[in-house]
Length: 258
Image (cartoon, rainbow, N blue to C red; front, side, top):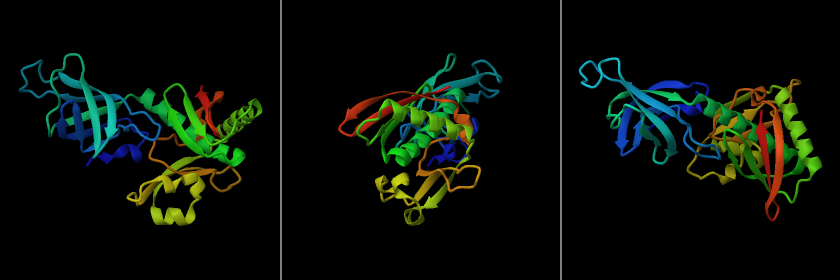
């Protein structure tokens, strides 16, 4: 079973791992920083590489085999889908030690957008009693679906202004684990949406956005397995770009980050 280091070390971008299994173009590692697609967040991309040994007949001891990580999916464990880079043939060998490097620009964008989505979800719940019912983010924009009849221009202006105030507050963002029984007894289930999680999940990862400088209660606590920045200031300026109706009492808000 792959150790999901992306849950505890989301600011790291380079790591070493051992190949546990090879499955066609997929590799399973003993540990990984690559985030698998899920929760509206796309998979990380990057590379895995290994230095060839002295006895290799290809190009000598200093040559390196490299594979592009083009997709990451979580099934029984984390599967990294690979494509050989130029000059590399074949796939890694089981038991080999590889060096993984994330496409950090892509990951950083996902961390910013995912944190912004948490701010937006909490804000819509506070201001409009509108629950988040879906979301999707990318490196260039994000969208969020809310259970609400219709947002007007004034609503969107309010959302954009409040989002940027939260960014300017530089509120801390942290994550930790909590057993499900304690979470259900102590946290606001309207925000955590614990009821949507399978009963088999007994330990939850909670992402918390801190209160303001006066020491208020946290702005938001949500059960989430995504990656996030450590302060809202890293989100950057938020620009709400529009809204569309997705059906009866379902509105979609789109936004971009500078």
